[in-house]
Image 1 (spheres, one colour):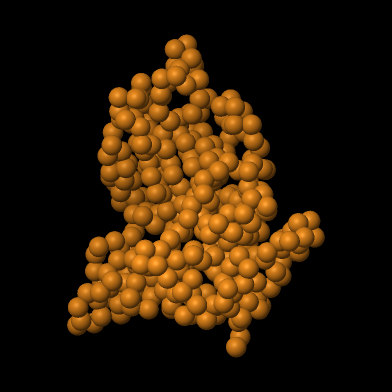
Image 2 (spheres, one colour):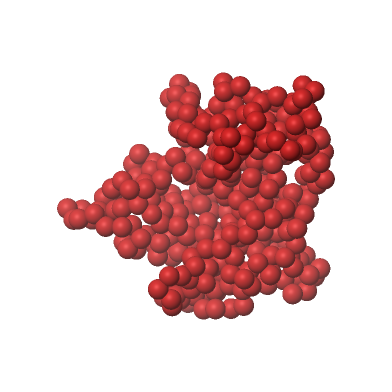
Length: 344
């Protein structure tokens, strides 16, 4: 109830640290999002860069985080040692199409050469070189075009001072350059960019009557996902909700193996509700979309979908500072989540 409240706590970790126990502790702290550094989905590249993890373990980290209701923010790095532009494009395709992964957000960084790192030796002997600008922009633009409508690319550069970068990209406006190239390719191929950040309504206005509620449904390895989005006729996005319908046998397995697994059979999960931009009523003044009931409508539609699919209750992974909002929508505190009974 404080004047300034935490509306989201993000914890960054390695995929091999994602366990039911760790996720339970994160929820106890109020976390709602987990950032996972995967860097690559090519096992040979992971091994060459001493990542010491398997693709199966990375996939399991995604599965566990998703069942716990977390938003999943993956780090993907282009131009690693032993990578090629072709392998980077293929790896990103795997990230956004393989049902084990399918992140909600991505940080898509190019590798930068920093003095004092192990990469310096490979740079000196010629076994690693930075991509030139054409290669790098080509890889990142292709990846933007491959990004599905439920995924947001949050960043494309690391916060390194240009003076610390021995070689590699130093453009602070790299994203602008990449998106310009992606726009050109999209126009040529008649394939609009679907990535969330590119479509955000942001400070623009639209009339509330022109918004449509679109349900983009997709399957992961252990859930059925519904990405509910308010969109304009131009496919700009004013708000969205992520609904997970867990595979019941996966929940049962974790209950058997973990004992204290906090999700019950028959429970759906709202993993994120986000509304932004400005929406004007017909012939009215513009107002912030967060005060026009768009979020409530998303929640109600998610409850309808979960009930129709046979789920008895629905959880929401709320931050400490958003509990009051969900309480007004009929959710009650129940352990690590807020819960609402369906069908009343």
